[in-house]
Length: 174
Image 1: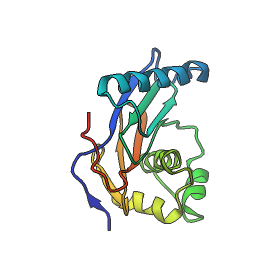
Image 2: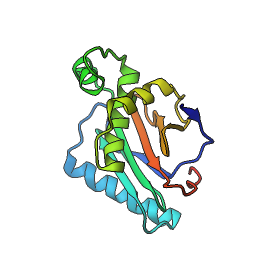
Image 3: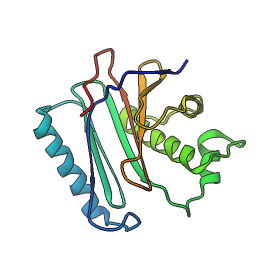
């Protein structure tokens, strides 16, 4: 059963680099920007160790960290030219047909889950994410101890966090 949770989450930050949202910034520039954002977040919060994750897509970089547990973050640009039908079938099976917003929530969940747990999510868990239909900014538990929250940090982008606190209380959202 999917249930709404109080707004608790790890510390996170999002930064928009210079340029239009559709611009493709080279990975050689994105990766250091995401690493710098994570370093700044560690300094701001005083959380020197613990799980962390970073992501980048075009002009957006994101970073998240916690004191314990597992954590993954992913950001994606909603590209109209992407093969959403084919990728939806890959994620959910032959009968899948997702609209753009649902697809990108699921895709970013899938990527963030892998970053958090080191394995791909299974189709049952992916379906639970879709069925949760949580509003942006509202965390939900989609499996025992596995939480997800989606956001739209900038027009045209979707961001998802996946975390498990391993039975420890999560940190307050910043």
